[in-house]
Image 1 (cartoon, rainbow, N blue to C red):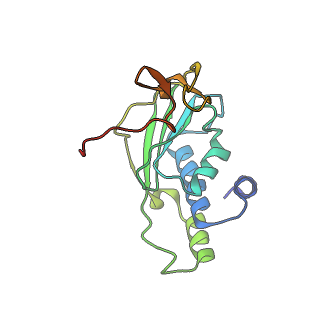
Image 2: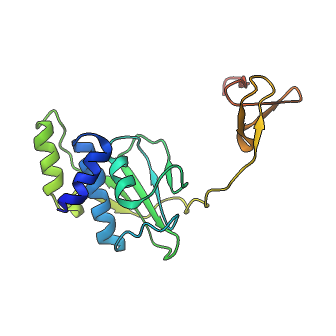
Length: 176
């Protein structure tokens, strides 16, 4: 285990925990499967299906970030990560499969177990079921005609002829 890399993750996240260890091992597994991680701008894309601690390790070790548009959150509640290399075309989805919980073992013991286990035993591997997301686009901002705040144009709604942000927009639904 690369202790320097682990410490970088802990420093960024604020503490060590089993969730951070999962993300750390996900990147280790990524490197075993697809080769060394190159932090060049948007070359590597990560789509995470969770918003848990492990995402911080992925961010630190891969350079993927929300701000650059190459770390995307796809809310599924699964400890799963899909990686895409825009240059090589490689892609990989991994789902954490270790069936041990904090109820069975203590937090520290679970963290050590994850860190000491070969990544191939921790994850189930497959191809993502979706294509590599497009590169981040830059949009103009428009002013909401109700609250006066600016919002990116693709998230503005038109209501009764006025441009309205999502916070001010009242969604219409008939129940299904």
